[in-house]
Every structure is written in structure tokens, then in C-alpha cells.
Length: 145
Image 1 (cartoon, rainbow, N blue to C red):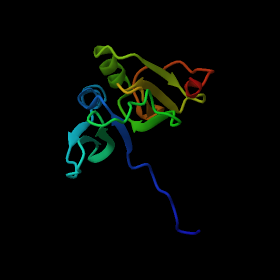
Image 2 (image 1 turned 180 degrees about the vertical axis):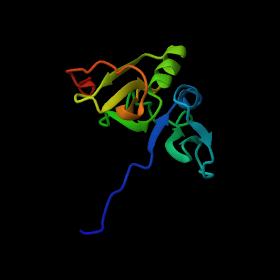
Image 3 (image 1 turned 60 degrees about the vertical axis):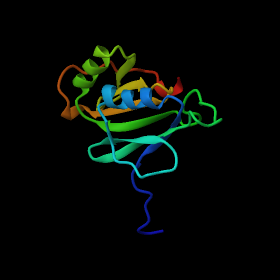
Image 4 (image 1 turned 90 degrees about the vertical axis):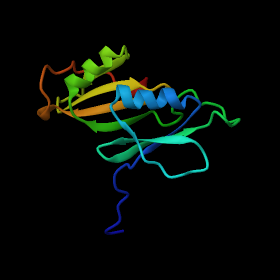
């Protein structure tokens, strides 16, 4: 299958009964921007990072579809990020519970935070490009939680 590639992740989609709260989380907490969205026959929002609609939100509050408690079999969604110390300060200032850690070997620093729907968001930072003190290296894997 030469020349064939799945490529990189384009976006993830959340079906929520808490659209406004979810939009606020991605805007105010993570710093994404609500932007243009096609005129679908159902309500929702598209959240942008660096000009790309990376989070698609669908409002299911007017339907009988139940709100799922978390992300189901998808354990978490990860972003390549920058500004590790700034994000930790941002999360703390907003009263968000989060976990920061260093991947064994030290090349990658991570922050884990949950959105209002229980979706775990992983923010990955290339250690060589970051300033400040490294977080603790953990022997356990947050992916087991």
C-alpha cells in the first residue's frame, strides 16, 4: 500500500447536553476559539486551535439521546502543546483539577485535565522547548485510571 497514509488526527467530536459549559471550558480553560461551523440541521459548535477546528461539539439536549458519563472506550484525547508553565498557571487560576508529569526519559512533559463531560484531555509538551522546572517523572501510567 505504498503512498497510503491515514495521516494525523483532524478533530474529535463530543455529543453533549451541556453545550454552553463545554464551549466555555474549551475557550476559557484551554484557550481554543469558537469559530465557523457549517449550517448543520442540529445545534453545536466548532472549537479552533491554530486555525483548525479540532473539537466538534454537538448539542443533544433537545433529543432523547442520553449524556454519556465520559469518553467511553476512548480513554483520552491528546494535543501537541506549548507553554507548559503558562497552562499550569491558567488551570490553577480557574480552579481546575489537573495532573502534570514527565514521561519516563524526560523528553515529554504532560498535563491531564477533564472537560465538563468527563473527557480526559492530555496536553503534551516537548521538554526541550519548555522553560521552568520539569514535573516529576511518574512510575505509573495515567492511562490506567
